[in-house]
Image (cartoon, rainbow, N blue to C red; front, side, top):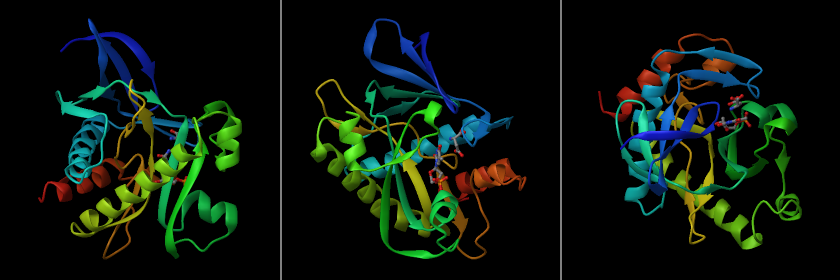
Length: 238
Ligand code: TMP
Ligand code: ASP
């Protein structure tokens, strides 16, 4: 399995075509760390390897519970073989506890447990700073074909949460919130894509509420790599 042309470079991954294969891509996990729409940038050696490892295990976990994803196999330390999909330009954010932009935007107390799982949509467009949108915006901008597709995104977000909340709880991590991206296969099916890692999730230690995710970078707390390693080690049962 050889990388050919670079198809797309995002903040956390590069996507490569595979010669003679129109249905699969190779995702390479980078060591770049960015926040606030890449206004803040750094590098953390080995972060890509950790995110590839963590994402692989989490994709397998949700697939075991019947969620379809773009994941095919982990090829090596940094590379993952995935199904080629058309990414829907909506970031689906699922929240169990108020923090981050939710607390900032609405003044909800940081750390407040939400009375129910909140699903939000953000328009994936760097030039606009990924603004929050509602269903009507998504339809007007033709980000999806119809409202039923938005319901599918919401339901899949909640289903992934229902699988991952007890999973992380069992390894002493609170799943505070996370961001998912979905894509459409050639036959129009909506499947989970992108990654599930400490770059895209917030994890707090169940006993101490210590932050074990990219907030350590966003908030200049240091110890980013150790935090990602802690998540990896707990997942591996170390
Ligand atoms: P937020 O509180 O900053 O809106 O973030 C909500 C969740 O989404 C959090 O787990 C971090 C994740 N996230 C991303 O993966 N990418 C992003 O660009 C942003 C803004 C958040
Ligand atoms: N993913 C965004 C960036 O890389 C924002 C974030 O995760 O805080 O800039």
